[in-house]
Length: 265
Image (cartoon, rainbow, N blue to C red):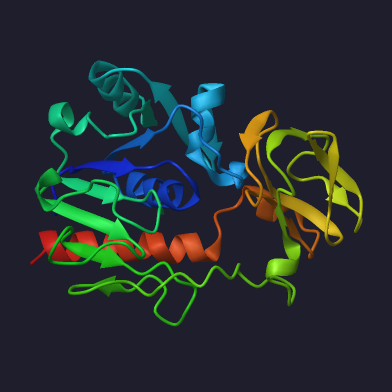
């Protein structure tokens, strides 16, 4: 039986949250770090929402915003997930995690090193297993999704969204200009094709297809032209807005496999 290992996850977006959820359910002590103004769109399934609301619940697991190492211990005692605003993950010096997972999904290494923990895992492209991290987990939506890479790199990002109802890029919404994003719809709302869902600098943003708003940026966020604002799910099923996606579960499973490869060697 494994001892209760401490895990520090850099990032609290969709993939980081799915990993935190999986490891928490497997009785690891997990802490997530985040920036002060996260720009997640899949907010129904991201623990980064705790930065704004204080707490965020996903499928029965609750994350709570904390400000110190002492509060991390208190939240663990409550059987919850601590989220701390710490973009550089400096808390690792105090926390001494057994495992560090870079789940920022920046497509490049922004400062993660082999010396950060006994086991350091990188998600997706931008890391080399055996060089800057110990192991890499594949995040590309291919036959290798969730694969643990012992040497080398993950596949290059294709930029193609997951297919839902036969649609990929057609269901994704991007900002037409720089400005402040002002939503007049919310996650879970049903919309028709062409229906106005937001304004940016007075310019309307319309739903590209009919369906349910599965993901949407938090209102009043500053955005640049081309920023991903949200996604429409053409199936119209509201439940998917608050359920961890199959892709995220596969990646979380790969992370758990990576941990077992290392600690059960």
